[in-house]
Image 1 (cartoon, rainbow, N blue to C red):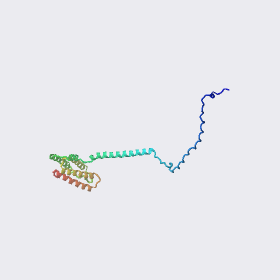
Image 2 (image 1 turned 120 degrees about the horizontal axis):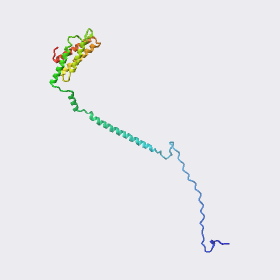
Image 3 (image 1 turned 45 degrees about the vertical axis):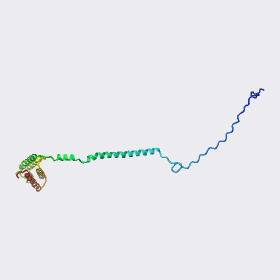
Image 4 (image 1 turned 30 degrees about the horizontal axis):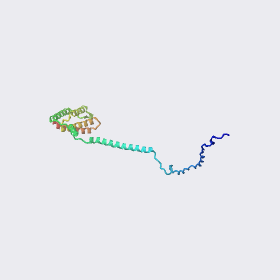
Length: 217
């Protein structure tokens, strides 16, 4: 029987490692503490609810819009106020120039010539009406007299230029108005007594204009 080479004399001895120790039994898993009962609001006890981020963003945008709108309104109001302020202030220079334009000045020669022309036109137109009867004859319209009266009014109105003196102009305007009143009444359905009353007023206006013109009645 052949002996093992490891049994020879002088051969080093070999020491085997000890067997591994048996693994200790696993410790029981740590049990989680029981969770706290939820609050009625749905959040666990001991923790506060967190607001969503989008809510803060929306609030910031809304605040920016309000501030921008208020700033724009203030700027617009200031601009309009500054633009209206100077325009609303009255200016004395334009008023003076306007007054000078609306009140033209005429020389004595111009006023005298304007008066002479108006009085001449008035005399010619009025003298032609005399001896032709009234505006109505036996209740009927006297067409030729009415036409001459209206023609006289148009002629005097045309000759009533700004250069005419104030007294002559006032008498001429009164003559024009009273003559139109009586001719309008005569051509309408106005009763004859009323036409006669208006005719007397027109005759008084004729006499007044003859007087300021220096013409005989």
